[in-house]
Image 1 (cartoon, rainbow, N blue to C red):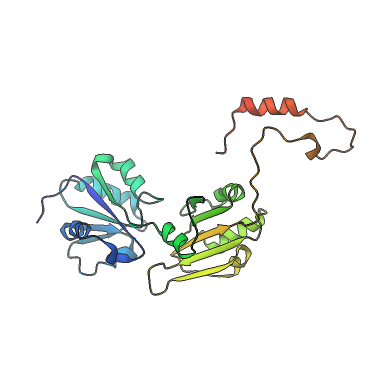
Image 2: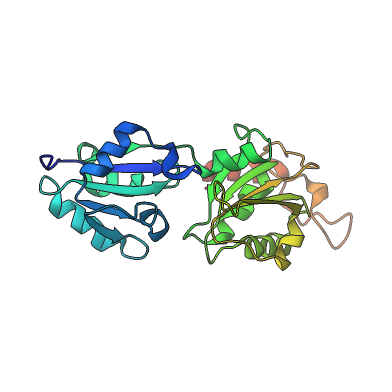
Length: 255
């Protein structure tokens, strides 16, 4: 048995599953005494002889377990795709420190999804509604032509589409990539509003492309003529120059 390590290894598993793991990464897993991860990922290693700890809804206790067993047990955390991209790596590094973590990434689910629809992702706004208020993406969608989204069981493509429609987002092109890398893999090409009536596998990635999108250049102050007034000759409005100075003093940001 290998001597216990002072680091926990975070292993990313891509759409190709365990077949995409390198020999050295497999060796880390084979030498582990504890394997942690989502149930779907743990099931990929039916022959693992050590302890398996599901992470589904027990992250605080799992982090305590890892912290208490550093240097005592060899531990591997399984993650989907790139653990540094909206994944568990950030949380573990924050809680354990850089020296206690080693990350072995795989191709992200996001990258695989964009590859499936043959679209570049370097010009996309990439975000997540996994465990986050879905309303946070409204501004992102308004400000970008191409958007990639990690969803979850609660913030489904249907819910996202409904909220975006309610907030005036146009009925743009939508792509839902389900169960990538499995026998059930499916890519649905449709329009945003159509998603409201469709149920998808919990394991999916959503891409929106607004072909008619026009980016509005940032400016300080709204022109006077864009305000609604009771009469055209009404002077009851703060002048543009004053509004612009006030906005500049406030040091507003997108966040």
